[in-house]
Length: 255
Ligand SMILES: Nc1ncnc2c1ncn2[C@@H]1O[C@H](COP(=O)(O)OP(=O)(O)OP(=O)(O)O)[C@@H](O)[C@H]1O
Image (cartoon, rainbow, N blue to C red; front, side):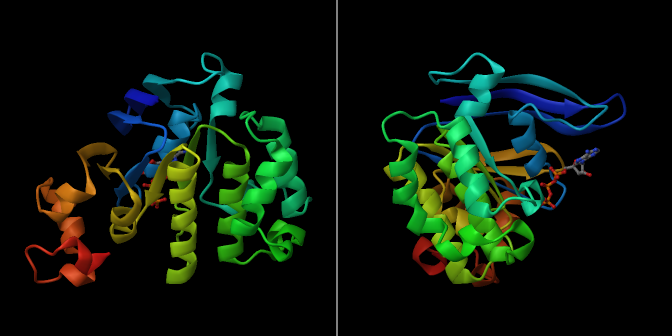
């Protein structure tokens, strides 16, 4: 379990993230939703110990893993699928750098890196994407490369920052299906950051709702769908076009 306890980011003048606590269990998907600037990406980077200059981090992040207890352990146990492809090395092809990173950080010994990559190869990275340099990737190809980079590292926990932002419906569904595979078939803990509540409802076991750096709701898809949630969460739910002018909508109608 990855346990986040009163995690905060602040300076003398401003609170970017007010204390946030939650757990990410192996085999589960936790979704994070909130408006732009509400602190979703900061939450992911703060879990990894990466905070903006001039700010301090409060609280604790602990996790159960063979490698827990040191900074190398964190890198070997938690991988980030970043929001932007700028994190990719511009001088290496996608396949070269993904394999390189996977070999450096492969933690799970059950499968060799080679076998694992053969298994996942067809799911995210085809030859066309693998041969590209980052500047040659389309938006959707870049999202696949970023998620593949995180999942190939074979960490217990994956933080996926807007993995489907800007993708067409079919591509987004395929990436969400892959996140489900990572959690349910491979038993990893997956944190998914998204603007799209409808998509999160279809995959997440639990949903964290952020508003202006605060965790205002820690809830489940069932509670959201049945209207038993914080007013802000309810407003997000009612903003889904299928729910306009309706007080309650059955899950089947929005799935
Ligand atoms: N390096 C930084 N220095 C100062 N403030 C920052 C820094 N990075 C982010 N912030 C501030 O922290 C807040 C949260 O930013 P964050 O990137 O986490 O938002 P977000 O919810 O991920 O937004 P989006 O959905 O647009 O990606 C914003 O007000 C932003 O201006």
